[in-house]
Each structure stands twice: as C-alpha cells, then as structure tokens.
Length: 259
Image (cartoon, helix red, strand yellow):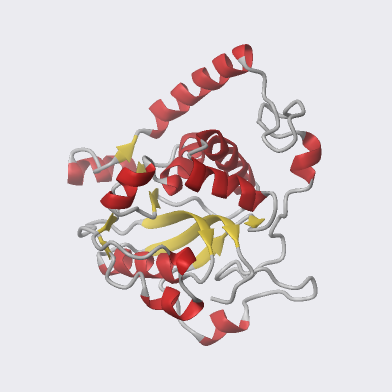
C-alpha cells in the first residue's frame, strides 16, 4: 500500500531501491558467491557459518546490546530496565532506537573497515547481522527506510554511503522501500569523530533537508553507529517537520556514551 502511495506522489519515490528486485539480485548473487567462494570468517579466517562470512565462534562473541534503553539504545546495567534518565527527562525527535550490538570489538573493527578502508564485504556481513537481529523483534516494521546521508563532497571522497550499504539487506529481506535520497545533507560538517561531546551536539544542526511528505509515514532512519544521538536527532527533526509521522532510529552499533 505504501509503495503505491509513494509511487502516486513521486511517480517513483526519489532514490528508491526496489526491494523486490534487490531481493532477487541478492539471492542470485549470494548463491553464485557460495558456489565460487565459500563463506570465510572475516575475523579469524575459519569457515563461515549460516552462509555468512562469520564463523559460529566469532558470532557467539559479538557484543550484543541486550539490555538497553528503548528510547536511545544506550547500554544499561543488567539490573536496569526501561528508559534511561536522559530519555525520561528530555523529549526526543525520534520515537525509539534499535541498535542490536554494542560498539566494541569486533563490531568496531568491522565498521571501521567499512567506513575508512572501503571493505564492502564488511557491509554485507553487518547488514545480514542487522537484518537477522531485526527478524527477532516483535515491533511492526516501518513503511520505509532512509539512510543518514553523506554530504556530496564526502560521498565523492568515500565512494559510498555506509548507512545505505548497511540498509540493503534489511530492505531486501523484509521488502521495505529504501529511500536513498529521502534526506539530503546540505551543509558540509566536521566529522563527529573529531569533536568532543559538546560540539557533537551542535555540529549537525542545519545540515540536513527533506522535501514535504504528503503521506503520514513511519520511517526507520538508519546509521552505522550511534554515539551522542545528535546526528540522528537532527535528521529525525527535519523529517518530522516535513510531515513524517514517526521516526525510529536504527543503528548497527551503540556506544556507551551518554546522549
């Protein structure tokens, strides 16, 4: 239904990745790859398991974010439950956050290899892991997925948007429209990793733009890592100002920093 509405408004939603076509291409490519190159663990070199480039032992060692605040996904102590103090005290532009892993070894190694060394094989594995974790949830799926965009200058430098690459597996598996240009980055900003916590809060302000959404969508906004929450918070604010009904944040990894 949402696909038809989006098509009715835009002809074809701008930047939409066809989830049905993506799923068929992914299945065919995965089958060919398994035939020619059996899966090999990207972490230790052992044989991969479940058709992924990750062995059973390394998969068991992944730092899962089981106990986390439902609002911002910050890891909580085992004895804690519910929303963290920050989420209880301050309103947010997004409804909730799903981050299945903590940004710790070896997840940080895989994400850094993708972002800074161009290892797209890491994106495929991380995307598959995220989609598998998503399948274990009971919450309803969103109407569409929007990746946090890169500024055109940084996109030219890197050659790809890591958030878009991470989103592909979930979009294909669950047949969710992936709107690659649902948001635009209109101001070049200093990378968040170079800033302290205070400047990270203000750095993304005014950096994003979105068109007017004529239908009330529930959107999943996806990024690789969530640290202070300032980038996704600004993205969600812009989307809601444009008419999006609800924004849920998806991130592969979550740091332990306060948001």
